[in-house]
Amino acid sequence: MSPLPIREIGDPVLREVAEPVSLEELGRPETQELIEAMIETMREANGAGLAAPQVGVAKRIAVIEVRPGNPRYPYKPPVPLTVLVNPELEPLGAETYLSNEGCLSIPNLRGELERAAEVRARYLDRDGEVKDEIRRGLTAGTFQHEVDHLDGVLLVDRADPATFSTWEQFERFGKAEFVARATELTARLGA
Ligand code: ZN
Picture (cartoon, rainbow, N blue to C red):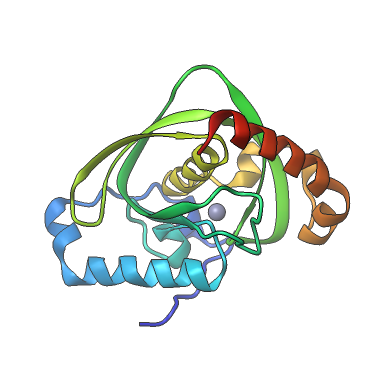
């Protein structure tokens, strides 16, 4: 299996509301192969997550993984490989934090947006097992980013355009302050 091409902003599939996946469909070999290909695509691109619309499939499937030392996101706490099928997120409490995010479908752009600091995530894993967990801080933000993709929402819709920057300018002007905030958030809330 090889990585799939990543769809970029302007491709209409990124604006579709993705369809739920039935248990029968989840069990099919082609769906399991799609999940494998998504994992491989995310890893090759050093993403923290990838949603099926980003590889041209409008289905409610996303994968998330942050391995220690991820070069795109060195400040994110590690997250084991997680496959989300039909995920539903519920913010817990009113706390939000100012996130700074990039997206594999929006090359060389970052922006700042508010994310819920804590969410309850309910989803099926790739075997159809029901999962119900709480995610916090930057990891909660990653979950929200991926579920946004399944609703056709991109970070440019939520971010203040005045905060947009290229990755290089984020490194120069924004990173130190954001990493300090992110480190505090991770220390306080965990992942
Ligand atoms: Zn994205």
